[in-house]
Image (cartoon, rainbow, N blue to C red; front, side, top):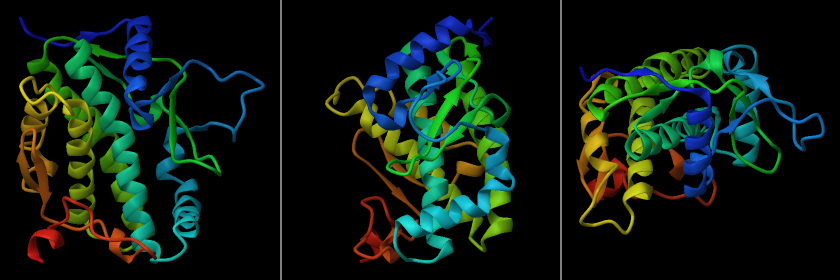
Length: 240
């Protein structure tokens, strides 16, 4: 029977190390940090939906030097979604595994000179055929992680739920674009993304043309950042 099963921690760690070579958004560190590791301390994943969230939104707002708290909240959500979707999608299609990136399993930090970083102190996850892993990946990312983050974010800042799910879909499509770059006859990311975009919160967030583009039906507000503009998949681009 085509079912997912718990994966060996060593296999998850190896797969994460492999997909990290694809770029920064695919990188998730594993294991406990070394005592002399540079950078700020790692914090429990649950704090992203707790007391740390208002300060994190304020930090993003300070870094983008304007635009207001709604813009900062939107960009924070999109960055977090990209950090989750990128390794999940890459591992799903490249090794038949999905890492467990739920808040209880995660650690995070926000370096002064970088973006949000994630870590799995005790790597875990699932392995199996793609058909079994697609709904599991959706539940792990959208239901278990992004949904509580979205709810906490909307209690902190007045921002549209539709906009945030558009950000999640855009981050997912962006991960597929990186995976399939230079593979016009052998797409591996887009077919899975097509299926994920048909599920619940992501349904209706945009239109995907595999191997070509994604056109979302909302705007992440990046154009309000001083010096910012419209993203290539923004609904405002098509309207103009």
